[in-house]
Image 1 (cartoon, rainbow, N blue to C red):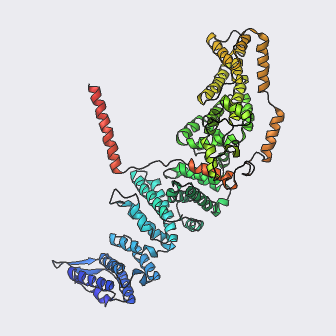
Image 2 (cartoon, rainbow, N blue to C red; image 1 turned 90 degrees about the horizontal axis):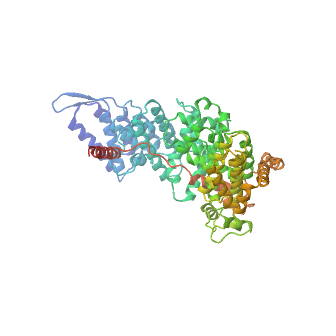
Image 3 (cartoon, rainbow, N blue to C red; image 1 turned 180 degrees about the vertical axis):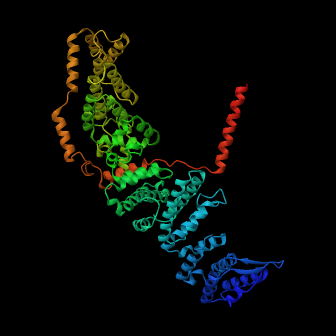
Length: 632
Protein backbone atom coordinates (compact mmCIF):
# COMPACT_ATOMS: atom_id res chain seq x y z
CA UNK A 1 0.00 0.00 0.00
CA UNK A 2 2.82 2.42 0.86
CA UNK A 3 4.41 2.09 -2.59
CA UNK A 4 1.16 3.22 -4.17
CA UNK A 5 0.91 6.12 -1.77
CA UNK A 6 4.43 7.35 -2.49
CA UNK A 7 4.09 6.95 -6.29
CA UNK A 8 0.84 8.87 -6.37
CA UNK A 9 0.65 12.64 -6.96
CA UNK A 10 -0.61 14.42 -3.86
CA UNK A 11 -1.31 17.97 -2.92
CA UNK A 12 0.74 19.17 0.04
CA UNK A 13 -2.09 19.23 2.57
CA UNK A 14 -3.30 15.74 1.73
CA UNK A 15 0.20 14.28 1.86
CA UNK A 16 0.93 15.92 5.21
CA UNK A 17 -2.31 14.42 6.54
CA UNK A 18 -1.31 10.94 5.30
CA UNK A 19 2.20 11.34 6.75
CA UNK A 20 0.89 12.48 10.14
CA UNK A 21 -1.54 9.55 10.26
CA UNK A 22 1.31 7.07 9.78
CA UNK A 23 3.31 8.75 12.55
CA UNK A 24 0.33 8.76 14.94
CA UNK A 25 -0.36 5.09 14.20
CA UNK A 26 3.27 4.25 14.98
CA UNK A 27 3.10 6.13 18.28
CA UNK A 28 -0.09 4.33 19.32
CA UNK A 29 1.33 0.93 18.39
CA UNK A 30 -1.19 0.30 15.58
CA UNK A 31 1.65 -0.66 13.23
CA UNK A 32 3.64 -3.79 13.94
CA UNK A 33 7.44 -3.84 14.01
CA UNK A 34 7.51 -5.60 10.62
CA UNK A 35 5.18 -2.98 9.10
CA UNK A 36 7.28 -0.14 10.50
CA UNK A 37 10.45 -1.65 9.03
CA UNK A 38 8.74 -2.02 5.65
CA UNK A 39 7.43 1.56 5.69
CA UNK A 40 10.77 3.10 6.69
CA UNK A 41 12.78 0.93 4.27
CA UNK A 42 10.49 1.74 1.35
CA UNK A 43 10.58 5.45 2.15
CA UNK A 44 14.38 5.36 2.25
CA UNK A 45 14.59 3.56 -1.14
CA UNK A 46 11.79 5.43 -2.91
CA UNK A 47 12.44 7.88 -5.72
CA UNK A 48 11.33 11.52 -6.00
CA UNK A 49 7.76 12.38 -5.02
CA UNK A 50 5.37 14.53 -7.05
CA UNK A 51 3.32 17.05 -5.06
CA UNK A 52 0.91 19.74 -6.25
CA UNK A 53 0.96 23.21 -4.75
CA UNK A 54 -2.15 25.16 -3.80
CA UNK A 55 -2.00 27.03 -7.10
CA UNK A 56 -2.09 23.71 -8.99
CA UNK A 57 1.55 23.82 -10.07
CA UNK A 58 3.34 20.45 -9.98
CA UNK A 59 6.52 20.23 -7.88
CA UNK A 60 8.91 17.28 -7.79
CA UNK A 61 10.38 16.80 -4.30
CA UNK A 62 13.69 14.93 -4.29
CA UNK A 63 14.19 13.61 -0.75
CA UNK A 64 13.00 16.11 1.82
CA UNK A 65 9.49 14.67 2.17
CA UNK A 66 10.82 11.13 2.52
CA UNK A 67 13.18 12.34 5.22
CA UNK A 68 10.29 14.09 6.98
CA UNK A 69 8.34 10.81 6.97
CA UNK A 70 11.26 8.79 8.33
CA UNK A 71 12.07 11.39 10.99
CA UNK A 72 8.40 11.59 11.99
CA UNK A 73 8.21 7.81 12.42
CA UNK A 74 11.41 7.69 14.46
CA UNK A 75 10.18 10.53 16.69
CA UNK A 76 6.84 8.79 17.17
CA UNK A 77 8.59 5.62 18.29
CA UNK A 78 10.68 7.64 20.73
CA UNK A 79 7.49 9.10 22.23
CA UNK A 80 5.50 5.87 22.14
CA UNK A 81 4.51 3.98 25.26
CA UNK A 82 3.95 0.78 23.30
CA UNK A 83 7.06 0.46 21.15
CA UNK A 84 10.51 1.94 21.22
CA UNK A 85 13.13 2.66 18.59
CA UNK A 86 15.32 -0.26 19.63
CA UNK A 87 12.51 -2.69 18.74
CA UNK A 88 13.33 -2.18 15.06
CA UNK A 89 16.58 -4.08 15.59
CA UNK A 90 20.20 -3.07 15.61
CA UNK A 91 20.98 -4.35 12.13
CA UNK A 92 18.03 -2.52 10.58
CA UNK A 93 18.87 0.77 12.31
CA UNK A 94 22.56 0.50 11.34
CA UNK A 95 21.64 -0.06 7.68
CA UNK A 96 19.25 2.87 7.81
CA UNK A 97 22.01 5.06 9.28
CA UNK A 98 24.35 4.27 6.40
CA UNK A 99 21.61 4.66 3.78
CA UNK A 100 20.63 8.14 4.98
CA UNK A 101 24.24 9.13 5.52
CA UNK A 102 25.29 8.21 1.99
CA UNK A 103 23.53 11.24 0.56
CA UNK A 104 25.91 13.76 -0.94
CA UNK A 105 24.12 16.60 0.84
CA UNK A 106 22.80 16.19 4.36
CA UNK A 107 19.76 18.32 5.02
CA UNK A 108 18.88 19.45 8.52
CA UNK A 109 16.24 16.70 8.69
CA UNK A 110 18.76 14.09 7.56
CA UNK A 111 21.16 15.28 10.27
CA UNK A 112 18.46 14.89 12.93
CA UNK A 113 17.76 11.35 11.67
CA UNK A 114 21.44 10.48 11.85
CA UNK A 115 21.81 11.84 15.37
CA UNK A 116 18.77 9.77 16.45
CA UNK A 117 20.35 6.68 14.89
CA UNK A 118 23.89 7.38 16.17
CA UNK A 119 23.58 5.01 19.19
CA UNK A 120 23.47 2.13 16.68
CA UNK A 121 26.55 3.22 14.75
CA UNK A 122 29.38 0.70 14.44
CA UNK A 123 33.09 1.34 14.13
CA UNK A 124 32.66 1.30 10.34
CA UNK A 125 30.39 4.34 10.67
CA UNK A 126 33.06 6.49 12.33
CA UNK A 127 33.61 8.63 9.16
CA UNK A 128 29.88 9.36 9.09
CA UNK A 129 29.82 10.39 12.76
CA UNK A 130 32.88 12.54 12.11
CA UNK A 131 31.04 14.17 9.20
CA UNK A 132 28.15 15.01 11.53
CA UNK A 133 30.59 16.47 14.06
CA UNK A 134 32.21 18.72 11.46
CA UNK A 135 28.79 19.96 10.29
CA UNK A 136 27.84 20.72 13.88
CA UNK A 137 31.13 22.52 14.58
CA UNK A 138 30.77 24.70 11.51
CA UNK A 139 27.24 25.68 12.56
CA UNK A 140 26.39 27.65 15.66
CA UNK A 141 27.64 25.47 18.48
CA UNK A 142 25.81 27.24 21.29
CA UNK A 143 22.33 28.75 21.34
CA UNK A 144 22.73 29.83 24.97
CA UNK A 145 25.95 31.74 25.78
CA UNK A 146 25.67 30.62 29.41
CA UNK A 147 26.14 26.93 28.60
CA UNK A 148 29.58 25.34 28.50
CA UNK A 149 31.56 25.23 25.29
CA UNK A 150 30.76 22.00 23.44
CA UNK A 151 27.91 21.03 25.74
CA UNK A 152 25.35 20.33 22.99
CA UNK A 153 27.74 18.26 20.90
CA UNK A 154 29.07 16.33 23.89
CA UNK A 155 25.53 15.45 24.94
CA UNK A 156 24.84 13.98 21.49
CA UNK A 157 28.14 12.13 21.24
CA UNK A 158 27.71 10.58 24.69
CA UNK A 159 25.01 8.33 23.17
CA UNK A 160 27.36 6.84 20.55
CA UNK A 161 28.87 3.44 21.30
CA UNK A 162 32.47 3.64 22.59
CA UNK A 163 34.23 2.00 19.62
CA UNK A 164 32.53 4.18 17.03
CA UNK A 165 32.96 7.24 19.23
CA UNK A 166 36.69 6.68 19.75
CA UNK A 167 37.39 6.39 16.04
CA UNK A 168 35.16 9.35 15.15
CA UNK A 169 36.97 11.56 17.68
CA UNK A 170 40.35 10.73 16.14
CA UNK A 171 38.97 11.14 12.61
CA UNK A 172 37.59 14.57 13.49
CA UNK A 173 40.88 15.64 15.08
CA UNK A 174 42.78 14.64 11.93
CA UNK A 175 40.25 16.53 9.76
CA UNK A 176 40.65 19.66 11.88
CA UNK A 177 44.43 19.43 11.58
CA UNK A 178 44.16 19.25 7.79
CA UNK A 179 41.85 22.27 7.81
CA UNK A 180 44.29 24.17 10.00
CA UNK A 181 47.19 23.38 7.68
CA UNK A 182 45.23 24.85 4.77
CA UNK A 183 43.47 27.72 6.55
CA UNK A 184 44.95 29.39 9.63
CA UNK A 185 42.23 32.05 9.98
CA UNK A 186 40.00 32.58 12.98
CA UNK A 187 37.54 30.03 11.57
CA UNK A 188 39.95 27.24 12.41
CA UNK A 189 40.49 28.64 15.91
CA UNK A 190 36.70 28.76 16.33
CA UNK A 191 36.37 25.11 15.34
CA UNK A 192 39.16 23.96 17.66
CA UNK A 193 37.83 26.08 20.51
CA UNK A 194 34.53 24.20 20.46
CA UNK A 195 36.19 20.86 19.75
CA UNK A 196 38.49 21.05 22.79
CA UNK A 197 35.48 21.99 24.94
CA UNK A 198 33.56 19.02 23.57
CA UNK A 199 36.41 16.61 24.29
CA UNK A 200 36.80 17.93 27.83
CA UNK A 201 33.09 17.44 28.59
CA UNK A 202 33.09 13.98 27.04
CA UNK A 203 36.04 12.96 29.18
CA UNK A 204 34.37 14.25 32.33
CA UNK A 205 31.30 12.05 31.79
CA UNK A 206 32.94 8.68 31.27
CA UNK A 207 36.21 6.76 31.53
CA UNK A 208 39.14 7.55 29.21
CA UNK A 209 38.07 6.59 25.72
CA UNK A 210 41.15 6.20 23.58
CA UNK A 211 42.88 2.83 23.74
CA UNK A 212 45.58 0.87 21.93
CA UNK A 213 42.95 -0.99 19.86
CA UNK A 214 41.51 2.33 18.76
CA UNK A 215 44.95 3.44 17.60
CA UNK A 216 45.55 0.21 15.67
CA UNK A 217 42.30 0.59 13.71
CA UNK A 218 42.72 4.33 13.21
CA UNK A 219 46.33 4.10 12.02
CA UNK A 220 45.40 1.43 9.46
CA UNK A 221 43.04 3.85 7.67
CA UNK A 222 44.37 6.00 4.87
CA UNK A 223 45.27 9.58 5.76
CA UNK A 224 47.25 12.51 4.39
CA UNK A 225 48.97 12.86 7.78
CA UNK A 226 52.08 10.87 8.61
CA UNK A 227 52.00 8.18 11.29
CA UNK A 228 54.09 10.39 13.59
CA UNK A 229 51.66 13.29 13.17
CA UNK A 230 48.71 11.01 13.84
CA UNK A 231 50.32 9.74 17.03
CA UNK A 232 50.81 13.33 18.21
CA UNK A 233 47.15 14.03 17.40
CA UNK A 234 46.16 10.86 19.28
CA UNK A 235 48.06 12.01 22.37
CA UNK A 236 46.62 15.55 22.09
CA UNK A 237 43.05 14.22 21.92
CA UNK A 238 43.73 11.98 24.94
CA UNK A 239 44.93 14.97 26.96
CA UNK A 240 41.86 17.00 25.95
CA UNK A 241 39.59 14.15 27.01
CA UNK A 242 41.35 14.02 30.37
CA UNK A 243 41.37 17.78 31.00
CA UNK A 244 38.90 17.62 33.88
CA UNK A 245 40.90 14.86 35.53
CA UNK A 246 44.21 16.62 34.89
CA UNK A 247 42.87 19.76 36.57
CA UNK A 248 41.09 17.94 39.39
CA UNK A 249 41.77 19.22 42.92
CA UNK A 250 42.21 15.58 43.97
CA UNK A 251 45.84 14.57 43.54
CA UNK A 252 44.92 10.88 43.28
CA UNK A 253 42.71 11.54 40.26
CA UNK A 254 45.47 13.45 38.48
CA UNK A 255 47.95 10.66 39.14
CA UNK A 256 45.45 8.07 37.94
CA UNK A 257 45.03 9.87 34.62
CA UNK A 258 48.80 10.25 34.27
CA UNK A 259 49.23 6.48 34.70
CA UNK A 260 46.47 5.58 32.25
CA UNK A 261 47.78 8.06 29.66
CA UNK A 262 51.31 6.69 29.94
CA UNK A 263 50.20 3.05 29.75
CA UNK A 264 48.05 3.72 26.68
CA UNK A 265 50.82 5.43 24.75
CA UNK A 266 53.49 2.93 25.76
CA UNK A 267 51.28 0.08 24.56
CA UNK A 268 51.19 1.44 20.99
CA UNK A 269 53.16 -1.00 18.79
CA UNK A 270 54.95 1.71 16.76
CA UNK A 271 56.72 2.99 19.88
CA UNK A 272 58.84 -0.14 19.84
CA UNK A 273 60.51 1.22 16.68
CA UNK A 274 63.66 3.14 17.58
CA UNK A 275 63.31 6.88 17.09
CA UNK A 276 59.55 6.80 16.39
CA UNK A 277 58.61 8.74 19.51
CA UNK A 278 61.39 11.27 18.81
CA UNK A 279 60.04 11.82 15.31
CA UNK A 280 56.53 12.19 16.73
CA UNK A 281 57.76 14.87 19.14
CA UNK A 282 59.40 16.74 16.30
CA UNK A 283 56.21 16.40 14.23
CA UNK A 284 54.27 18.38 16.83
CA UNK A 285 55.84 21.57 15.53
CA UNK A 286 54.14 21.06 12.14
CA UNK A 287 50.66 20.56 13.64
CA UNK A 288 48.34 23.56 14.11
CA UNK A 289 47.24 22.46 17.58
CA UNK A 290 46.73 24.75 20.59
CA UNK A 291 48.73 24.35 23.80
CA UNK A 292 51.42 22.19 22.25
CA UNK A 293 53.67 22.87 25.24
CA UNK A 294 51.38 20.70 27.43
CA UNK A 295 51.56 17.90 24.88
CA UNK A 296 55.36 18.20 24.72
CA UNK A 297 55.67 17.93 28.49
CA UNK A 298 53.68 14.71 28.59
CA UNK A 299 55.45 13.11 25.63
CA UNK A 300 58.85 13.92 27.13
CA UNK A 301 57.79 12.09 30.27
CA UNK A 302 56.82 9.08 28.14
CA UNK A 303 60.20 9.30 26.41
CA UNK A 304 61.80 9.17 29.89
CA UNK A 305 64.17 12.09 29.44
CA UNK A 306 64.48 15.75 30.35
CA UNK A 307 61.45 17.74 29.15
CA UNK A 308 63.33 19.98 26.73
CA UNK A 309 60.94 22.03 24.56
CA UNK A 310 61.06 21.90 20.77
CA UNK A 311 62.98 25.11 20.13
CA UNK A 312 65.71 23.74 17.92
CA UNK A 313 67.27 25.45 14.92
CA UNK A 314 65.96 24.40 11.53
CA UNK A 315 69.24 22.86 10.49
CA UNK A 316 69.23 20.46 13.46
CA UNK A 317 65.52 19.64 13.72
CA UNK A 318 65.95 16.54 11.60
CA UNK A 319 68.86 15.16 13.60
CA UNK A 320 67.08 12.81 15.98
CA UNK A 321 70.18 11.48 17.69
CA UNK A 322 71.55 14.96 18.30
CA UNK A 323 68.19 16.10 19.61
CA UNK A 324 68.10 13.31 22.16
CA UNK A 325 71.19 14.56 24.02
CA UNK A 326 70.79 18.35 23.76
CA UNK A 327 69.40 18.88 27.25
CA UNK A 328 71.84 21.20 28.99
CA UNK A 329 72.98 22.94 25.81
CA UNK A 330 69.73 24.83 26.22
CA UNK A 331 71.42 26.94 28.92
CA UNK A 332 74.26 27.87 26.56
CA UNK A 333 72.38 29.09 23.47
CA UNK A 334 71.10 32.60 24.20
CA UNK A 335 68.14 32.44 21.83
CA UNK A 336 67.02 29.00 22.99
CA UNK A 337 67.39 29.99 26.62
CA UNK A 338 65.41 33.24 26.28
CA UNK A 339 62.59 31.49 24.42
CA UNK A 340 62.47 28.73 27.01
CA UNK A 341 62.60 31.23 29.88
CA UNK A 342 59.54 33.02 28.51
CA UNK A 343 57.48 30.08 27.27
CA UNK A 344 58.79 27.05 29.19
CA UNK A 345 60.12 28.29 32.52
CA UNK A 346 58.91 25.16 34.29
CA UNK A 347 60.98 23.05 31.88
CA UNK A 348 64.11 24.99 32.80
CA UNK A 349 63.32 24.48 36.48
CA UNK A 350 62.96 20.71 36.15
CA UNK A 351 66.15 20.50 34.10
CA UNK A 352 68.14 22.63 36.57
CA UNK A 353 66.83 20.79 39.63
CA UNK A 354 67.85 17.43 38.16
CA UNK A 355 71.41 18.29 39.26
CA UNK A 356 70.46 18.54 42.92
CA UNK A 357 70.63 14.78 43.39
CA UNK A 358 74.42 14.81 43.03
CA UNK A 359 75.94 18.21 43.79
CA UNK A 360 79.50 16.80 44.23
CA UNK A 361 79.39 15.58 40.64
CA UNK A 362 78.09 18.96 39.45
CA UNK A 363 80.84 20.67 41.44
CA UNK A 364 83.48 18.55 39.73
CA UNK A 365 82.04 19.21 36.27
CA UNK A 366 81.71 22.94 36.91
CA UNK A 367 85.38 23.10 37.99
CA UNK A 368 86.39 21.51 34.70
CA UNK A 369 84.17 23.87 32.70
CA UNK A 370 85.43 27.00 34.46
CA UNK A 371 89.05 26.02 33.88
CA UNK A 372 88.55 25.31 30.18
CA UNK A 373 85.90 27.67 28.81
CA UNK A 374 84.88 31.28 29.46
CA UNK A 375 81.33 30.30 28.45
CA UNK A 376 80.96 28.16 31.55
CA UNK A 377 79.60 31.12 33.49
CA UNK A 378 76.59 31.36 31.14
CA UNK A 379 75.63 27.74 31.77
CA UNK A 380 76.26 27.68 35.52
CA UNK A 381 74.55 31.00 36.31
CA UNK A 382 71.46 30.08 34.29
CA UNK A 383 71.22 26.67 35.92
CA UNK A 384 71.32 28.21 39.41
CA UNK A 385 68.93 31.01 38.44
CA UNK A 386 66.31 28.41 37.50
CA UNK A 387 67.02 26.03 40.39
CA UNK A 388 64.26 26.86 42.88
CA UNK A 389 65.12 24.01 45.26
CA UNK A 390 68.73 25.16 45.41
CA UNK A 391 67.64 28.70 46.29
CA UNK A 392 65.35 27.33 48.99
CA UNK A 393 68.24 25.37 50.49
CA UNK A 394 70.51 28.43 50.34
CA UNK A 395 67.92 30.54 52.15
CA UNK A 396 68.20 28.12 55.10
CA UNK A 397 72.00 28.36 55.29
CA UNK A 398 72.06 31.02 58.00
CA UNK A 399 74.61 30.50 60.80
CA UNK A 400 72.16 29.08 63.37
CA UNK A 401 70.99 26.46 60.90
CA UNK A 402 74.53 25.46 59.93
CA UNK A 403 75.57 25.17 63.57
CA UNK A 404 72.57 22.94 64.28
CA UNK A 405 73.40 20.69 61.34
CA UNK A 406 77.00 20.35 62.50
CA UNK A 407 75.77 19.39 65.99
CA UNK A 408 73.33 16.86 64.52
CA UNK A 409 70.14 18.65 65.57
CA UNK A 410 67.64 20.95 63.91
CA UNK A 411 67.03 24.48 65.29
CA UNK A 412 63.66 24.84 66.93
CA UNK A 413 62.81 28.04 65.09
CA UNK A 414 63.57 26.69 61.60
CA UNK A 415 60.81 27.24 59.08
CA UNK A 416 60.21 23.86 57.42
CA UNK A 417 60.34 23.87 53.67
CA UNK A 418 57.16 23.18 51.77
CA UNK A 419 58.85 20.43 49.84
CA UNK A 420 59.80 18.43 52.92
CA UNK A 421 56.33 18.86 54.39
CA UNK A 422 54.92 17.71 51.08
CA UNK A 423 57.02 14.54 51.17
CA UNK A 424 55.64 13.72 54.59
CA UNK A 425 52.05 14.15 53.40
CA UNK A 426 52.69 11.82 50.47
CA UNK A 427 53.81 9.09 52.80
CA UNK A 428 50.52 9.30 54.67
CA UNK A 429 52.03 10.60 57.91
CA UNK A 430 52.98 14.02 59.32
CA UNK A 431 56.07 15.57 57.80
CA UNK A 432 59.12 14.53 59.77
CA UNK A 433 62.49 15.97 58.82
CA UNK A 434 64.32 13.11 60.47
CA UNK A 435 62.66 10.58 58.15
CA UNK A 436 63.45 12.44 54.94
CA UNK A 437 66.91 13.08 53.60
CA UNK A 438 66.85 16.26 51.58
CA UNK A 439 69.70 15.05 49.44
CA UNK A 440 67.41 12.56 47.73
CA UNK A 441 64.14 14.52 47.88
CA UNK A 442 65.18 17.00 45.20
CA UNK A 443 66.29 19.79 47.53
CA UNK A 444 69.97 19.84 48.55
CA UNK A 445 71.10 20.43 52.10
CA UNK A 446 71.97 24.04 53.01
CA UNK A 447 75.57 22.98 53.74
CA UNK A 448 76.01 21.52 50.26
CA UNK A 449 74.36 24.53 48.61
CA UNK A 450 76.62 26.99 50.42
CA UNK A 451 79.68 24.85 49.70
CA UNK A 452 78.87 24.89 45.97
CA UNK A 453 78.68 28.70 45.85
CA UNK A 454 81.98 28.98 47.71
CA UNK A 455 83.53 26.48 45.32
CA UNK A 456 82.29 28.41 42.28
CA UNK A 457 83.68 31.67 43.66
CA UNK A 458 87.12 30.08 44.14
CA UNK A 459 87.06 28.50 40.67
CA UNK A 460 86.04 31.78 39.02
CA UNK A 461 88.68 33.71 40.97
CA UNK A 462 91.52 31.39 39.90
CA UNK A 463 90.40 30.71 36.32
CA UNK A 464 93.08 31.54 33.77
CA UNK A 465 90.79 31.53 30.73
CA UNK A 466 89.17 34.83 31.72
CA UNK A 467 90.64 38.24 32.42
CA UNK A 468 90.90 39.56 36.00
CA UNK A 469 88.04 41.96 35.35
CA UNK A 470 85.76 39.22 33.96
CA UNK A 471 86.71 36.92 36.84
CA UNK A 472 85.87 39.68 39.32
CA UNK A 473 82.40 40.04 37.79
CA UNK A 474 81.82 36.31 38.18
CA UNK A 475 82.92 36.23 41.81
CA UNK A 476 80.79 39.29 42.49
CA UNK A 477 77.83 37.40 40.96
CA UNK A 478 78.39 34.61 43.52
CA UNK A 479 78.49 37.24 46.28
CA UNK A 480 75.21 38.80 45.10
CA UNK A 481 73.58 35.38 44.68
CA UNK A 482 74.22 34.70 48.35
CA UNK A 483 72.79 38.08 49.35
CA UNK A 484 69.75 37.68 47.12
CA UNK A 485 68.69 34.36 48.66
CA UNK A 486 69.77 34.83 52.26
CA UNK A 487 72.98 32.82 52.30
CA UNK A 488 75.80 33.98 54.61
CA UNK A 489 79.03 35.39 53.15
CA UNK A 490 81.79 33.18 54.52
CA UNK A 491 85.57 33.79 54.59
CA UNK A 492 86.00 31.80 51.36
CA UNK A 493 84.03 34.40 49.40
CA UNK A 494 86.02 37.25 50.94
CA UNK A 495 89.32 35.53 50.09
CA UNK A 496 88.12 34.89 46.53
CA UNK A 497 87.26 38.61 46.22
CA UNK A 498 90.69 39.55 47.53
CA UNK A 499 92.43 37.20 45.13
CA UNK A 500 90.56 38.29 42.01
CA UNK A 501 90.22 41.97 42.94
CA UNK A 502 93.67 42.64 44.40
CA UNK A 503 96.18 39.82 43.89
CA UNK A 504 95.42 39.29 40.21
CA UNK A 505 95.32 43.03 39.54
CA UNK A 506 98.68 43.64 41.14
CA UNK A 507 99.44 45.91 44.05
CA UNK A 508 98.97 49.09 42.03
CA UNK A 509 96.08 47.97 39.80
CA UNK A 510 93.13 47.98 42.21
CA UNK A 511 91.07 51.14 42.62
CA UNK A 512 90.82 52.69 46.06
CA UNK A 513 87.05 52.19 46.22
CA UNK A 514 87.25 48.51 45.29
CA UNK A 515 90.09 47.88 47.75
CA UNK A 516 88.14 49.46 50.61
CA UNK A 517 85.06 47.41 49.77
CA UNK A 518 87.03 44.13 49.67
CA UNK A 519 88.73 44.94 52.98
CA UNK A 520 85.32 45.65 54.44
CA UNK A 521 84.17 42.14 53.37
CA UNK A 522 87.29 40.63 54.97
CA UNK A 523 86.59 42.59 58.13
CA UNK A 524 82.99 41.30 58.29
CA UNK A 525 83.98 37.67 57.80
CA UNK A 526 87.38 37.34 59.55
CA UNK A 527 87.61 40.33 61.83
CA UNK A 528 89.21 43.77 61.79
CA UNK A 529 92.65 42.52 62.89
CA UNK A 530 92.92 40.15 59.93
CA UNK A 531 91.89 42.93 57.54
CA UNK A 532 94.60 45.25 58.89
CA UNK A 533 97.20 42.52 58.89
CA UNK A 534 96.30 41.58 55.31
CA UNK A 535 96.83 45.16 54.16
CA UNK A 536 100.40 45.38 55.49
CA UNK A 537 101.65 41.77 55.63
CA UNK A 538 103.21 40.37 52.45
CA UNK A 539 103.52 36.90 53.98
CA UNK A 540 99.79 36.75 54.82
CA UNK A 541 98.86 37.79 51.30
CA UNK A 542 101.12 35.08 49.84
CA UNK A 543 99.69 32.52 52.25
CA UNK A 544 96.13 33.43 51.18
CA UNK A 545 97.07 33.10 47.53
CA UNK A 546 98.59 29.65 48.10
CA UNK A 547 95.57 28.50 50.09
CA UNK A 548 93.15 29.66 47.39
CA UNK A 549 95.14 27.96 44.65
CA UNK A 550 95.14 24.76 46.67
CA UNK A 551 91.38 24.98 46.98
CA UNK A 552 91.00 25.34 43.24
CA UNK A 553 93.17 22.32 42.41
CA UNK A 554 91.51 19.22 41.02
CA UNK A 555 91.29 16.32 43.46
CA UNK A 556 91.99 13.48 41.02
CA UNK A 557 91.13 10.71 43.50
CA UNK A 558 87.74 12.29 44.20
CA UNK A 559 87.08 12.73 40.49
CA UNK A 560 87.92 9.10 39.76
CA UNK A 561 85.58 7.98 42.51
CA UNK A 562 82.70 10.13 41.22
CA UNK A 563 83.24 9.07 37.62
CA UNK A 564 83.34 5.43 38.66
CA UNK A 565 80.03 5.82 40.49
CA UNK A 566 78.50 7.53 37.48
CA UNK A 567 79.76 4.84 35.10
CA UNK A 568 78.49 1.94 37.21
CA UNK A 569 75.15 3.57 37.92
CA UNK A 570 75.70 3.84 41.67
CA UNK A 571 74.53 7.43 41.56
CA UNK A 572 71.06 6.37 40.46
CA UNK A 573 68.10 7.21 42.64
CA UNK A 574 68.10 5.03 45.76
CA UNK A 575 65.19 2.91 46.84
CA UNK A 576 62.56 4.33 49.11
CA UNK A 577 63.61 2.01 51.94
CA UNK A 578 67.20 3.24 51.95
CA UNK A 579 66.23 6.85 52.52
CA UNK A 580 63.46 6.41 55.02
CA UNK A 581 60.53 7.10 52.68
CA UNK A 582 57.60 4.65 52.85
CA UNK A 583 57.26 2.21 49.96
CA UNK A 584 53.99 3.84 48.90
CA UNK A 585 55.86 7.08 48.29
CA UNK A 586 58.82 5.86 46.25
CA UNK A 587 60.84 8.16 44.06
CA UNK A 588 58.85 7.36 40.93
CA UNK A 589 55.67 8.40 42.71
CA UNK A 590 57.34 11.60 43.85
CA UNK A 591 58.39 12.33 40.28
CA UNK A 592 54.82 11.84 39.11
CA UNK A 593 53.51 14.12 41.84
CA UNK A 594 56.05 16.76 40.91
CA UNK A 595 55.04 16.40 37.26
CA UNK A 596 51.30 16.85 37.79
CA UNK A 597 51.85 19.77 40.15
CA UNK A 598 54.18 21.59 37.76
CA UNK A 599 52.24 20.91 34.57
CA UNK A 600 51.98 24.20 32.67
CA UNK A 601 48.69 26.02 32.35
CA UNK A 602 46.79 25.90 29.08
CA UNK A 603 46.75 29.22 27.25
CA UNK A 604 43.59 30.68 25.65
CA UNK A 605 43.71 30.71 21.86
CA UNK A 606 40.20 31.91 20.98
CA UNK A 607 37.89 34.46 22.58
CA UNK A 608 34.13 34.66 22.14
CA UNK A 609 32.66 37.62 20.30
CA UNK A 610 31.39 39.21 23.51
CA UNK A 611 34.90 39.02 25.02
CA UNK A 612 36.50 40.45 21.89
CA UNK A 613 33.95 43.27 21.85
CA UNK A 614 34.57 44.07 25.51
CA UNK A 615 38.34 44.16 24.93
CA UNK A 616 37.84 46.45 21.93
CA UNK A 617 35.64 48.86 23.91
CA UNK A 618 38.16 48.91 26.74
CA UNK A 619 41.01 49.67 24.34
CA UNK A 620 39.02 52.47 22.72
CA UNK A 621 38.21 53.96 26.12
CA UNK A 622 41.91 53.98 27.07
CA UNK A 623 42.78 55.57 23.75
CA UNK A 624 40.16 58.29 24.27
CA UNK A 625 41.50 59.07 27.74
CA UNK A 626 45.04 59.29 26.42
CA UNK A 627 43.98 61.72 23.69
CA UNK A 628 42.08 63.75 26.26
CA UNK A 629 45.16 64.04 28.48
CA UNK A 630 47.28 65.09 25.51
CA UNK A 631 44.72 67.79 24.63
CA UNK A 632 44.92 69.26 28.10
